[in-house]
Amino acid sequence: MGMGVVKSKRMPRAVREQQMLDAAVEIFGQRGYMAASMDEIAELAGVSKPLVYLYLNSKEDLFTACIRREAAALTEAVRTGVRTELPADRQLWDGLLAFFTHTSQHPHGWSVLHLQARIHGEAFAAEVTAMREEIVAFVTHLIVVAAREAHRDPDLPEREVAGLAEALVGAAESLAAWANATAGVTARQSAATLMNFAWAGLGNMMEGRPWTLQDTPSGSAPLQVS
Image 1 (spheres, rainbow, N blue to C red):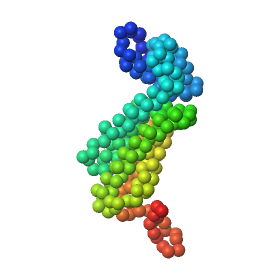
Image 2: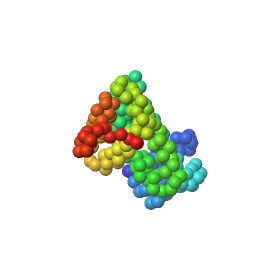
Image 3: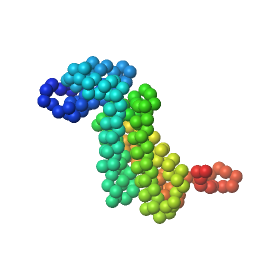
Image 4: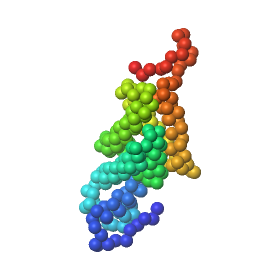
């Protein structure tokens, strides 16, 4: 763990706050919100506990600040990882790789977002929901772009696109949690797993080859979202 910081009276407030947040994310991610100790956070940050309260008011405010910082960092990583001039499948790959790279490099931050924030109150959960909605909107756009590029179904039903985006983001969230808890799984392997899983279906659907239910009285028919 040991990332204690040498104190400096001249250290800018913004820098010291980031050190506090670094320490808090590590402790919250390891211990959980309820078990996390402000004393331990202060010690890890190399500051006094009164200074933590002076800067961030309360444990609740500190946790909220951690959620907001980690959420902003994750969404920024995904957005900057995608080059919009590339084909849709490459955009999705780059987005997935950026997502899994960030969550693997910041496992405590991902624990705060994916687990801790969701189980310790509506206010915390709402912060994560806002981040998730932004990522879902981003993935929704990629699916729409893919449909247009395929020249088969540029007007996919809005609800179907929304459902696909939700399913893809949900799968990414679960896979990231599993990968962080499983030794030897790289970000690239996680991205490839989900890309192969998702694009095989998405690609076929965009090209007019949806999965069909074979054993029906009327024969094979594509399943429609109604």
